[in-house]
Image 1 (cartoon, rainbow, N blue to C red):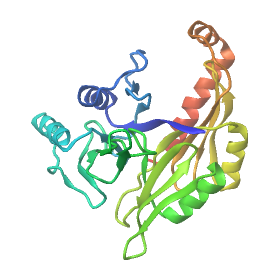
Image 2 (tube, rainbow, N blue to C red; image 1 turned 180 degrees about the vertical axis):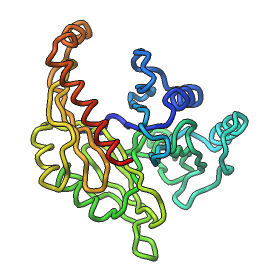
Image 3 (spheres, rainbow, N blue to C red; image 1 turned 60 degrees about the vertical axis):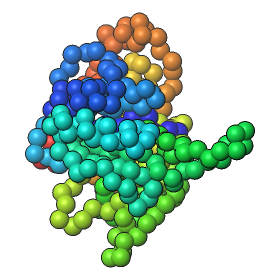
Amino acid sequence: MRLDHVNLTVNDVEEASAFLKKHFGYTDAFDDNNADISVLAGEDGMHINLMRGNNPTYPKMFHIGFDVGTEDEVKAVYERLTTDGISARPPANSNWGSFTFHFTCPGSNFIIEVACETGKSSTYDHSSGMHYIQRVPKDYGSVTPYIIVRGVIPFIEFLKQAFDAVERVIGTNEDGTIGHAEVWIGNSVVQMFDAKPDWPDTPAFLTLYVEDCDTTHQRALEAGAVSITELSTSAWGDRGSRIRDPFGNIWWIQTHIEDVADDESARRMQKEAYLRDMEIGVETLDRELKSRV
């Protein structure tokens, strides 16, 4: 199984989408002229799905990172963004071997990190006898989910029970909270850390592809999750459901069960059963998010 999409609820879909396309090379994956949703595709195949929130004051913070290669490139991105009106502290060396800066994405409350590795991931090239730096560190994707949660340790236990997560890194602060942790879910790394007591809740919305969504859905419920959208099969060949984990995050659990040509998918979309399933998907998610306002 693999983590394939990052789903973000934002205040202004058009503004956030335009920003990511302008500065990070994302393009429209679909052209449906829908002001409430934008599906963006990156060069590495990772998708970012932007969805308009019902309440612009509702906290929707999420953390995503972009690796841009070199320190000079990080500085260039910083200069370009600040010239364009973005507020951010100048890039600096981090304690874990990267040169980085952070800012809030326009039209949203989620945080973007722009960074490059400065020595953490040295690799030896036997053919040339030279060491080189792997700019996107081994095992990471260009976009890596970073979830802010209340209770990292029980959250990891849930991920183990529901999704067969495997612990990768756990770093503890002096006060016993978790400053940084990572797990494997399928072939993807998911990062997380403990929220401070006076921070707002910051739930995430993630798409998870698995071998058997029916079994995974049931395992998630047994681990303490609540079903939001029951299992159904889409016109484009994905079967899936949505659950809310005990920490408020929403997971869209899916299995791709059929390759469907575009014309066949369009034909199926005219059928009442598929249309109704889509309506139920929208209604159940809308009800869940409105219940948090």
